[in-house]
Length: 154
Image (tube, rainbow, N blue to C red; front, side, top):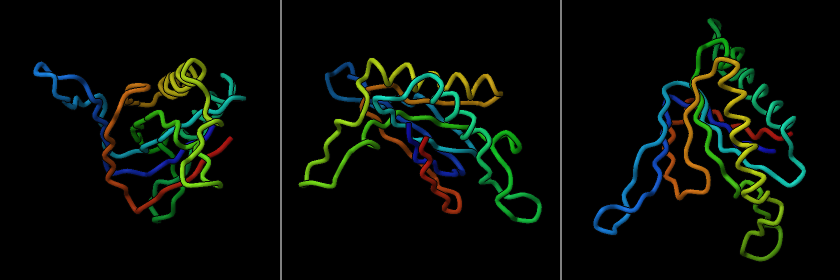
């Protein structure tokens, strides 16, 4: 399991839906204030234990400034929100050719419950969590704070 995590002043996700006239429309499914935007990918050997560890890591990741201006506080400590968006392309392999290979990304049947497990574990710890919609075409807006961007891999 891997995540691209950005400390954010705000974030939101829009999901594509067919409109009444057949044209696509975008509907907001999640919005956060200060917190973390998490793009989350799942691979074949991930399991529920990975989801729990990832949730713990995200909730306790010390990327928010303390009173001294040092990145020493977590979402748990500052009451930060989380926006979790599934992102199979995090497992895209670009080492050969010009087209990424996604063979390392887990199939939807495996990945979706694990993404949901991360979300549920975060909520169980007290997190306010917004999400996109698994498998949907999405637009993600991020106001990166810092900027602070981290790669988290289990």
